Length: 124
Picture (tube, one colour):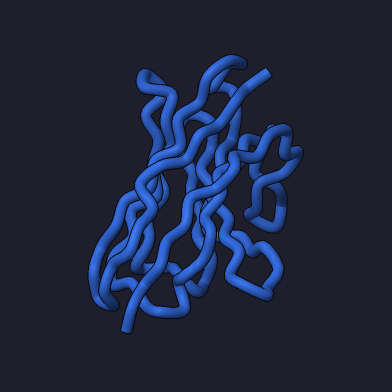
């Protein structure tokens, strides 16, 4: 059973950058598609980005496209979210997830595990 642990969250000023990591243990990391999601206070969890098992395909939500980039390192069993030009509305708890594939809607399908999340706060 794969376990996921996010790190790298914190407080950053608007316009700044932050990189999140999600380290996997157990399971076979290179067989999973991986995704990032976020949940702001009082809002539903929303999709941020997804990357295929070997990293050849990736998609990002419209709200972060051009500012955030998902990547992965299968040797280190880690998926990353590099965030630039951060805005106060990016404030949220960020979760990584492991799934079976990227679905037809360009989202992570077959989610088998969620991490516990890491908080990102962007001050204005």
